[in-house]
View 1 (cartoon, rainbow, N blue to C red):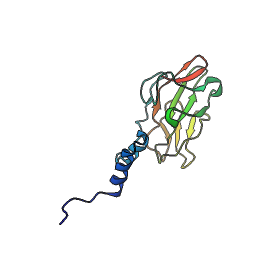
View 2 (cartoon, rainbow, N blue to C red):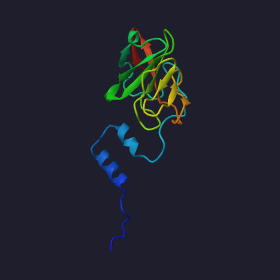
View 3 (cartoon, one colour):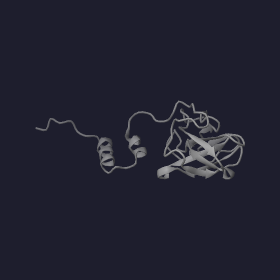
View 4 (tube, helix red, strand yellow):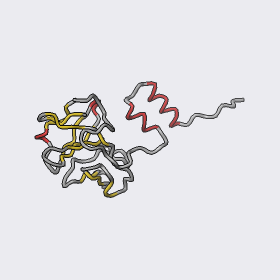
Length: 152
């Protein structure tokens, strides 16, 4: 008689994913807990949420319009949304919507919008402005270095 408890389909798939050494961003999708941040974001040059080596260039500052932003590829192909708050201040966030994982659109008018279900986030701090998302975007620490926006 088999007295071992059965393995759920989710647990089996997570084990396969880990065994194949898929990037850690996908492994976290197997967790049963919620993801996202509390909605707070670090100031320019803060240290939370960095996704690669400090100094890695993400985009030319000139390609990020003031009051708007750009959607760029970060290290490992991870999408990052960069918002230009003022002439010299930029903020960046993981571009994955905290509602259901879609990639958000470029910021416009101080707002980052998810095209899938309409969640809106503040470009200045990544916090939720309108649901269905309940947690803000995860901050990525960046700074301006010369004419480039780089990871901090």
